[in-house]
Each structure stands twice: as C-alpha cells, then as structure tokens.
Image (cartoon, rainbow, N blue to C red; front, side):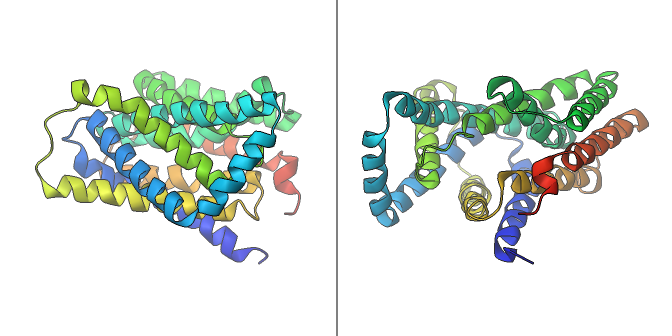
Length: 296
C-alpha cells in the first residue's frame, strides 16, 4: 500500500486516543479542572523542552517567515495560535468532565459527529462546498441526534459541546500559512497553560498526594497527548486531511465499545438506533465526499 507508514501512524494515533478512557477513568475521583491543569502544564513543559532542544532551526525559520507575512496573514497566524489554544483548552476540559462525570458514551458520540459538524461549520465560515449527497448525510446525522434527544437530552447537549469546541479548533487550523505545525501546536498549548495559570490558585483542589495521580498524568501527557500528536503530524505529511479525517472514527468506535464492555454502561434500543443512524450518516457523508473517493 502506498504511504503505508503514514497510514499506520494515523491509525495508531486514533487507536491510542480511543483507549483514553482507560487512563482517564481511574482519575474520576479528582476534579476535572485539576486533571486539565496538570495535563496542560506537563504537556506544555515537555513540548517546550523538545522545541528548545531539538527545533532551534525551525524556530529561526518560522520567525523569518512570520516577519515576511502580510499584516492580514500575521493576524491569521495569531488567530490560529490564540484561538486554537482557547478551543483546544475548552475541548480538553469538556472531554475530561463528560468522560468522568457523565458517560463515556456521550464523549464517544461527540467524536462520531465531529467530522460532519466540522464540515458544516467550514461551509458557513470558510465557504467550503458540500455535495448534495453530503447534505443528505448531514440531515440524517441531525435525525440521529434528534432520536438521541428524546430520552437522552443531557447526553446530546454534552456531546455537542465537545464536538463544537473541537470542530471550531479544526476549522481555525484549516488555513496553511506555512508555519511549522509542531511549533504552532506547542504555542497553542503554552497559551493554554498561560490561560489556565491565573485560575489555578483559586480553583484547584487539594494538591494530590498519591503517586498514582502523577503517573497517570505523565502517561496522559506523553502517550495520550504528545506522542499521538507526533504521529498525527507525521501522517499529515503524506496523507490528505480528508483521509486522516476518516480514520478519526476509530476513536469514538473504540470509546463506545469500551463503554459497553469494560464499564458496563447501558444502551437502550432508542439510544442504539440513534448511534446506528449516525454511523450510516458518517458512511454516506464520506461516500459522497469527492476528496475521499479520489485516490491519494
């Protein structure tokens, strides 16, 4: 297969994220904000060390690039940096809160509808076109969400909050100004850390004393944040974003399976039918996507 290593990198990244709940659920007794604080602070520190020690040439090249950009392009890069950092922080908090305090099904559902929602937002914000078949899939997806809302309105609300925050992040990153993606992501996480830092003294809980907390946070920072992001960046060097977007569905499918098998969360027939409709909508959406059906 062409670009086998890049496909494997993308598949590995989304497979790793699909098992996120296995590490996150043992931290359910800790406040969601504390998990977010430590995840962001540790990730920002580690990524900054990597950038300083291993990416010095990229720093210099990107500084020259930024100076050479027009005023409008500079604003675009700054929006990607600060806006992206804000959306990413919001998504992380909502995901942690919903996974630990609501249900894994709700967080899995969010990433099931996220790719479709991202494209719809791109249509209105970036004026990207949708085919007639894709609009049919979007309406079918909305019907599935409506079915879920009958008796699971709270799940639907939380899922949409997670999906919208991540979709806005993806849309904000669509424009390519030539900036190094790793350094841009590093800047976003640094901004996230600075955004959260003023809230830490007033909103953090008791400083955890258990070594298990710091071990799990370290695992989240290295193996569930930095490592899969590295794999994702590597995959995007050769694969189209639409191809990587399809592979994103590995994440919620694995999350949903864990919710049923490992954590014993119950699914009633109405809820199961809603997930089924969404899956059909996702398949149709990508089937009618010209970029997906064309060869890479």
